[in-house]
Amino acid sequence: MPLGVLILGGTTEASMLARRIAGDWRLAPILSLAGRTTSPRPQPIPTRNGGFGGTEGLVRFLQARAIDAVVDATHPYADQMSSHAVAACHEIGVPLASLVRPEWPRLAQDRWQVVADSQAAARALGAKPRRVFLSLGRQELHVFAMAPQHHYLARLIELPEPEGLPTDLRLLQARGPFDRADEERLLRDERIDVVVSKNAGGAATYAKIEAARALGLPVVMIARPHKPAGVAMTDVNACVDWLHGLAPRGV
Ligand code: NAP
Image (cartoon, rainbow, N blue to C red; front, side, top):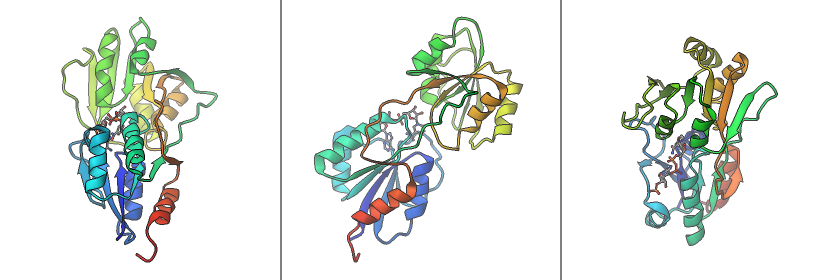
């Protein structure tokens, strides 16, 4: 029997891993997405969508689908999913690897103010009205309603429900990646004073950080949450090797 593998995804790394192992006769993978996007990109391996129902639900899923190994390739800020994965795998003795995306380093020219969460980011914008680029997901935008003195711009793949959003918020609908020239143009054309971002790491969303640096703009950087991990690795190839090491020989 091939090794039953659950990939907890929603990230570039999870999609890279899916492409790497698609068609690998030693592995029988399933990719799990949180279901945040109604039209996710097509994937080359079987995919499921939506929450499992906490740690207990994940345990039931792992048992029902005969999963032998889990790869947590979720977003660095998806800490709840990661803690459920650690607890569920520990409970039933399933090996867990975590694909950890390194943080963006802060360079000498970067004007970052690091804050603990999105509430702290809203406070850090200060009392004086500013033009703010919110480089955040749909779930975090409503927090900025607590600082209504600012003008906000956010760019999203799918637009959020309007309830509870900041009153002065303009939404752009677009799917990346965006290059540095695109990002500099956006920040300039929109006369942005400050960028709010998470330290997502990786190349896909780094251009806005480079653009802010080039334009000398401050960035309110929301720090990463503590994310419980299994066997930590930063490289997709290392993860494939780890899975092959678990796959029964002579399959
Ligand atoms: P989370 O807070 O860790 O997860 C909340 C719940 O969503 C989990 O308990 C789980 O529900 C479900 N879930 C999350 N990832 C899942 C997956 N891959 N497969 C199945 N269910 C999953 O994570 P989040 O709410 O998705 O996001 C937290 C932060 O990460 C946000 O800042 C968001 O912008 C960022 N982010 C997330 C994703 C993503 O694909 N999830 C992508 C980009 C950025 P149950 O408890 O019911 O199992």
